[in-house]
Image (cartoon, rainbow, N blue to C red; front, side):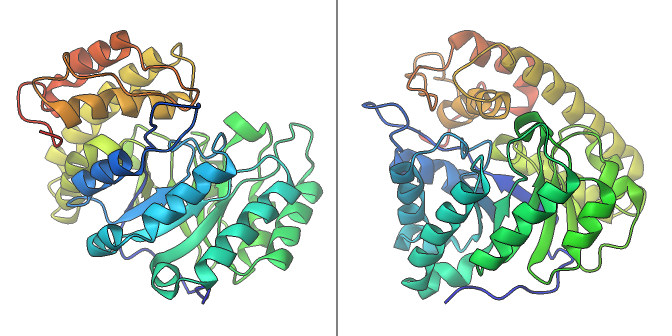
Length: 333
């Protein structure tokens, strides 16, 4: 049973596109045990997780890798965590998006419990720097016609090369299929337009300026942040401070997080082997996983099969040591 689209406005302001971990062997071989250990560790602070998102290497995942994540999502151990699930359908063409959605929906139709925990699938515009607004609308209309899941529209020009304009998104938002909009561009043009998007919830994927992004001062209902992979606790604390109108403390924490993440992401730009979101969070999570023994633990694999550099992990420890358990026990200990 595929979930029906429902009127949105978020019950929880934090979504996290979780890391995918890999096993030795051919590049991109998913390690479900290690991936689950990570999800279990962040679950106390995070309920809404996205599998096969950009941070989880969704653009690079093969069909077997995508299936491995569906298998993990449908496992009894995952059911015990009771997460709300979002799946990325991140493919470069309309046809490839539809194929991935068709496979996901076929799996969900055979697993009613997994379907009940799945809130939507995330779809970007086509990867085409020359795509017109009409072409973007045609892409999404084809996706709507060929699928049944609720859809989250994802603005990611860093990958797609094109941008959804506010009026184009207003037309997309008129569809009851669209329940969520994520913008990782850092430009915030659609949210800042303040057009009427009905009941579609707007979440920011760009890092930094966390507090300022949220309503009523900012234009967003919530966040869908890669850094929730390691900083779920301070992000949750930030939401609590905001709710309690402890504005000075909230601004200070937002500024500290923004400063640290900007520095770590800058270091990750030259890493290679995966996108900077994935590499930066994998470096920080290596410390979270192993705590005081992080220097002695085997470094994790990136989606291309190469090992994450020790230099990036060292940079993460130096920049964000006060936010990570560099001297404490890790969650794998």
